[in-house]
Length: 171
Image 1 (cartoon, rainbow, N blue to C red):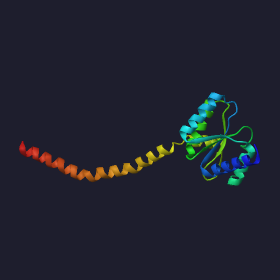
Image 2: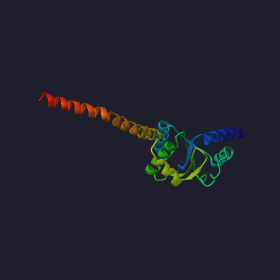
Image 3: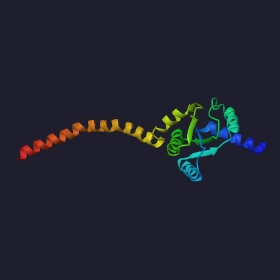
Image 4: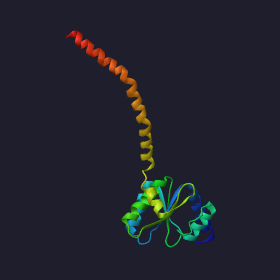
């Protein structure tokens, strides 16, 4: 790899490190079928999976203003970039459970906060963005539905009472 290629790779990595969330993994020991499956599932999930040289990744982190990655950039390292912080963590955690040699090293959250492997696993257990939005909508909608029920109760009760009076007079 010549200097121009290295500069281009550093620039791309820097831009991605500034963007969304990042999960660093040790991919050593994966066979071709597992690697192919990981890349396919990454594309489906909106996660970009890149194998990066540690020195280039460290330079990109320095340029992006991310500190504390040195401890994770040891040995074979692959990086998963995602817009949704939970998506990348979930996918890498699933593969870590499936493949014994596939290990999560750490990650970076949107704000540039460096996380350890335990934090990434904890993040992977959170519901996804779509599910959180659905839960929020349900939480907003529930009190409104209760309010409508309470406001309709007097009218409904009046109708029931009038119906009962009409039945008594007709009998």
